[in-house]
Length: 335
Ligand code: FE
Image 1 (tube, rainbow, N blue to C red):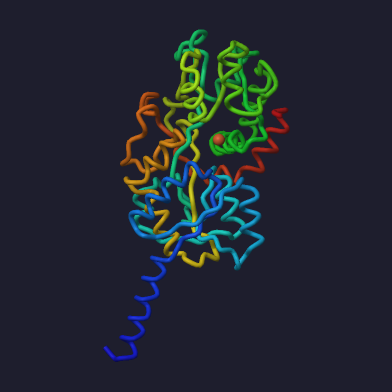
Image 2: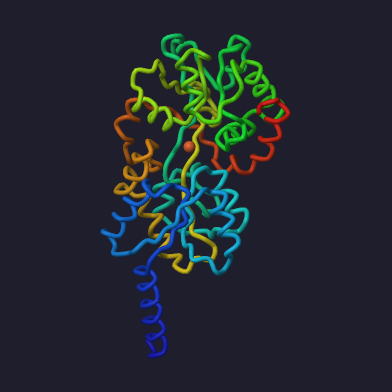
């Protein structure tokens, strides 16, 4: 090898080494209490320091956009595929070539263009009043539109991204006209006006205002930790249908490396580590979420709820169909 080439190789090696050991800056919509223990563990493992700021997803995205090339952020960590999809659409993320992430994250829980990757799974499922209903009374999200549920359904507000994502995923399966009829059916079955959050909807089910609602399981887990005697139970809907549309509606929390990252390799290494066996339980269990990595077992509380078949449609549809879903919910009178 000629001296010049050798020098070039050495310089490259030096650059990549320093990129690995340099600090990583994370903008996180997950709160400090959830991410700090993970980052501390990563620093102990690798010697890499992590700086982070936390905030609500909207303002964090706006900040990243406003900072442009001058942003110090290497990694964006947030909840809901809809938010990650928006970040990618706005050109705030960059694609990663990573065999580790391809192996650890199922295809439907990551961006087909590799700009973001799910790191934990959140299931949006049915919770019912166990002193009034039997599991056999329930079957699917769609069935809750049947007139037999008149004045027996409680729902969270349509303004929250979670129900927008659920309806977006239903559009991929049924198309708009049929989904609109289902949502209209839900609205005509409401026992009372939609609630501001999942916990209030479950409390209404527990006190008999209605029989069933649709919530993210971690809210159920938190409520039952606090009030274990409430007559509430989880039901996994859409389990017996044949297509890949069938199954429980799932969403993710996840991450991507920013377009203008100063330490993109360091950011990628961090996201790869978060998807690993070692970090997955720490990442998911603290918030009663499911690991995204199928090789990792969920927390005992979650395992106690039984296993379920998730919907296999790529979660990016929650973003790409969000506007259609919001308009449809509005037409159907879902507030
Ligand atoms: Fe939440």
